Length: 171
Length: 122
Image (cartoon, rainbow over all chains, first blue to last red; front, side, top):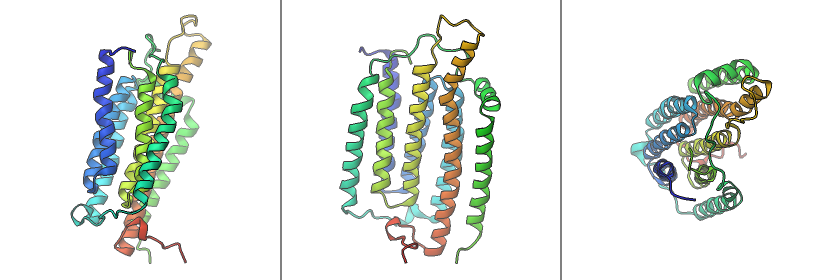
């Protein structure tokens, strides 16, 4: 396998994404974790663009880096976790166990999955409008209507439930 | 991308997933735990999209354009993207409800450390 310009582009996107993923877990401050997660989501959106899933890349930026992260930061602000430093992470047995489990899980998965697909290169010729909004939308409203409506109901229930949880005082 | 093997995307996805899994175990702040779950979901999304692109998106030259086989191929190719759309929607609902629960617990206890939450233990 040779170093191609595309591989360098991939490395420039994937390396910082991996670092940001570590930053989410490693940083003590919750706000800093959230900002690392925003960086990670943005870089993932660009990786989606490299996979020609343009519609989903834009959705990733709008939904994840926009809406969900605003929700996270809003809750951190409401709970005032940024300044309080409530969570001096205790050095206990959980930490080495978690790290060991993560590393061993990564090793096992990567050893099984990654070498098999190291030879698989991308197709030169891709289906026309593979990731375009038109294709995604037309499939969403024809073949995938039932799951689409199911997700719509789920989101409605989620909205009602979260309003209920936020309003009422649990006693 | 041409020149980038599928394994490279999968390696990044594996790394992100395992970082998220380790973070769920290590961290005690429930908000950060939620962020780690989002990380894992996004790793899965990346896997879906890269397999969809590398395995199902190529044009088969023997299939005539507009034929039934071509339509079936387009159908297979779009499956991964559809899954990602639904995962995103479910993740949004999950975060909204989860953060609502965290807010409710915080109002009740003034403390959201997951190691000290034992309301269900009688």
